[in-house]
Image 1 (cartoon, rainbow, N blue to C red):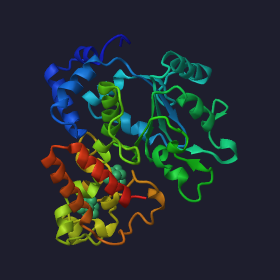
Image 2 (spheres, rainbow, N blue to C red; image 1 turned 60 degrees about the vertical axis):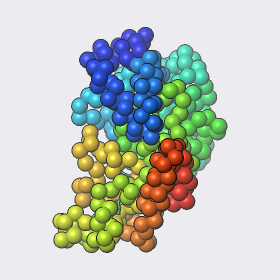
Image 3 (cartoon, protein in one colour; image 1 turned 180 degrees about the vertical axis):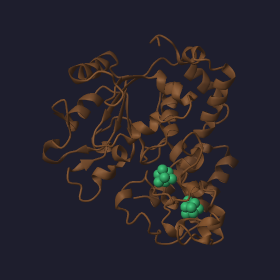
Image 4 (cartoon, protein in one colour; image 1 turned 45 degrees about the vertical axis):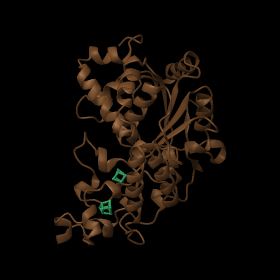
Length: 352
Ligand code: SF4
Ligand code: SF4
C-alpha cells in the first residue's frame, strides 16, 4: 500500500463502493452522536485522510486488547481503516525485533513529530524505579515518557491502560498506575474494556482521521459515543428488570426464560460501555445475551469492586430514567451534545 494514497483511494483499490463508504460514514456519525448532517463531512474528511502514524506500546498487559482488534470475522470497513494506519511499532504485530524495532519507533517519532498517535495497552509499574517491566533494557516509565513527548495524542486502550486494571488490583505489587497518571497535559483518550470493543477503537481512530481532532469525551476521557450510556440502559433484558423478574441462579427457570441477571451479579447498571449496542464478534452477541451478567470490565477498579457474582447493593431504575429524560430534552432542543454532557455528569456521580 502506498503511503501517498488517501483513505478514499485505499478503499476504492480494495473494492469498497462509494455507496458502501457513505453508508459506513452515516453509521459512524450516528454512533458517535454526530448530527446526520455531519455524515458527508465525515465522509469527505475520511476520504481525504492520509496515513496516520501510530506507535503502539504494550506494558503490563495480556495482549487481549490486540487480540480483540485483530479478531475480526470478515474484512469490514473498520478493518480497512485499521489497515490504513501506519502501525510503525507494535510488539505483537511487527515483523522486526531487537534493535531494528526500537529504531523503527525512533524513526517514526522523528519523521512524524507532533503528528503521531501513541496507543498504549497495559498499566505502568512505578515501584522500585519501574523495574518490573522493561523493554530493550529500559523501563516502561522511561519509554512512555520519551514516546509521548512529541505525540499528537495518547490513546489508552483496555482497562489496564485506562484505569490500571488487573495489575492495579489489590495488593498491586508493582505499584502499577494507569496511563492518565503519566501523560501530564497531553491529549488523552481512554478506551477501557477487558478487552475493549474493537469498534470503539476503530471508530475513535476514524474520528481522528476524519476531523483531525479528538472526539467528545466524558470526565474519564472516554469517547461519549461509545461510553455515554450504561449497559443496563441498552439491555434487551431491561423489561424483566422493571417487572422484577430475575434469574436466581444460572440454571433455574428464570434463567431459561431469559430474565434479568441482576441477582446473579450483573453489573450492567454501573457499566458504561457499548457492548449492548455494538455487541461482539461482528454484532453476533454479547455476554448478557449469552446468559452471563456484565462484570463492568470497562469501569475503574472493576477487579476490586467486590465479587463478580454478587449482586449490586440495591436495585434502582433511576439511572435509566435520568438518561432517558436527558435524551428527550436533548432531542427537543436539537442538542445531542447537551445530552451527552449531562449524561457524563451523571456517570461521574455513579462511578468511582
Ligand atoms: Fe440487563 Fe444486567 Fe440490567 Fe438486568 S441488570 S437489565 S441483565 S444490564
Ligand atoms: Fe465488559 Fe460488561 Fe461488555 Fe462484558 S458486557 S465486555 S463485562 S462491559
